[in-house]
Structures are given as C-alpha cells and as structure tokens.
Amino acid sequence: QVQLVESGGGLVQAGGSLRLSCAASTRTFSSYSMGWFRQAPGKEREFVAAISWSAIRTYYADSVKGRFTISRDEAKNTVYLQMNSLKAEDTAVYYCSANNGGIEILPRRYEYWGQGTQVTVSS
Image (cartoon, rainbow, N blue to C red):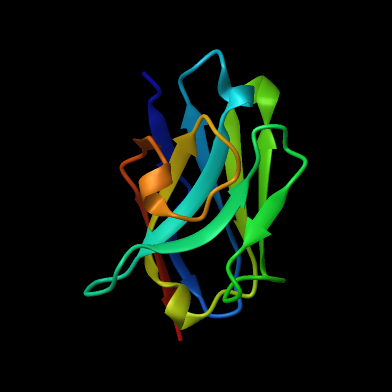
C-alpha cells in the first residue's frame, strides 16, 4: 500500500505563491509516476501536472503552464507543486496521486490518492 499525505495549502492573494508537498510512505517511490489534480466546488476533477517515474518527463495542463512546477525528491519520498502567479480560478482542493506506470493525465489511471489540501486564492 502507498499512503499519500498532502500539505502546504492555504489562503493567498492573487499573484502570490504556494508550494504544495506530498509525502509518500513507500520504499519504491522512484518507481511511481506522480500527478497533481484539483477539484473546485461543482466541477469535475481536473488534471494539473504530472512527473514520470524516472523524473525525466513532466507534463502540465495549459491553464497552469508557465506558472506551476512539479518536482520530486527521491531521498525524501516527496513530490512538490510550486505554484506561482496564482489566480482566483486556481482555488480548489488539490490532490496528490500515484501510479506505477508511465506519465498519465487521466484520474482513473492513478491507483493511490491523498486526502487533498485546500488552496484558496483571493482576488
């Protein structure tokens, strides 16, 4: 089993920054591709960013490209999402996810999920 715990969410002003963290409880962290998704009230879960198991590929939703950066620290079993130039439409619950295949953008391809962390951006 892989347990994922997100942290780092909070309330920020538009134009500000936050860094989300996702800690994974597995010795085989490096074998997983990791993804970040978000879900706002009344909306479907939306892909944000993903990073491959080998950390040689990343992929971003068009809505966050150029503003968000996904990274991973194998020694700490942690994936990060650095969010800059935040906008009101970034407000959502952000979820960390993991799969043991290649990079994916579909939620159903991810086997493990964290509990989510709230990000609220005020305009």
